[in-house]
Image 1: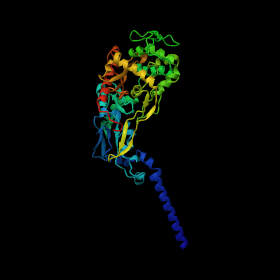
Image 2: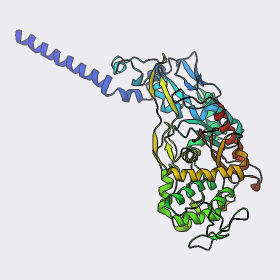
Image 3: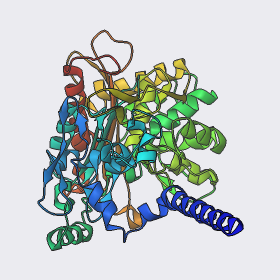
Length: 492
């Protein structure tokens, strides 16, 4: 009898251990697969049981939550949705999340372990802590200036603080209201279909996800490569640059929009944007030095995140001399996001130092306590201080007495570069109008803001479209808004 009891007790213990092991497997090992299973309705119910954390611009929340009266108790709301859509993205009960709503989803939904007061406590108890808030680096004034400046035209604006890398504005136009996608049901599905079918692509974040031929704004990179490599030592010396210029190894000739480019100095060629001078200059500098300089300024970087992923800006690493010449004036296969070109202007305005751009300043918990903060990070030195000073001379001449006069701001020092990028079959499409710039407050040695603007859908006659005419006034408005704001210290 004692033996039977002992065996039964042992069997019971084995069964109990098996039950515990299985419970651990279900609750710990396989919990992720159950959580990710789209058929698990309880996950969605729990996710939307409480209001979502806020995304803030300055001290104001630009997102919120409202009660639905349904199983999914709270849906996302947006203040000035189209204005901030390229920053926030959407949080949809039907279609998931995008942009900051996606990259910061764990913090905003309350699932991130970073919000737990005790490490691993929520994994053990399965409790959902209250969501945190994400504080962006965006300047409300700069964002609105950029949005109003584009006025619904297709295009984008990116602005950064050159000395820290803080992203001050990200605008994409035309835009959309993320609130249209927040809930569930036929109305949301119809809006999703409409937005995706729209040929204007309102949900495309053109500031960081779309690349364009940068046109003559790329001449900043070419000038930097020429100065860094020693190909150019005197900005005022005449160059041996014929007009028209025959591309190396071809019978194709390149011309300019206006006169005065034959053998022009780099200073004058930059000021009035001579294609022949800079195409030849790029060919003289050579592929290796051009690639080195472009990559020093951020081109070909596939890992850039702000924390949203940024599309790679391209400068080919294998080209023939004629292709190098065309690439050196921002054509051929050279492409860039507006954020990339803002980084180029920022490096020049920051004495050659390129800072890593970032969009999230800090994260706080529901009580306002700091959870995490993003600090300025030096990406690398993109050029020498001397080269940056020489490029500043060139860019400031463009605004003072060149193609970028429309960007001038009384009392401030502004440097800029216009661009009119050809595209389409045979370059017959309406050109993209570009302008990149930086602005220094009165008496400052370094720039307080750098901006890139591209206008892609101008419908005027071809001759009326230029970076100086279409894009420079937008950049000026954005720079003005930043210079007029109180200069807050980092982390404010």
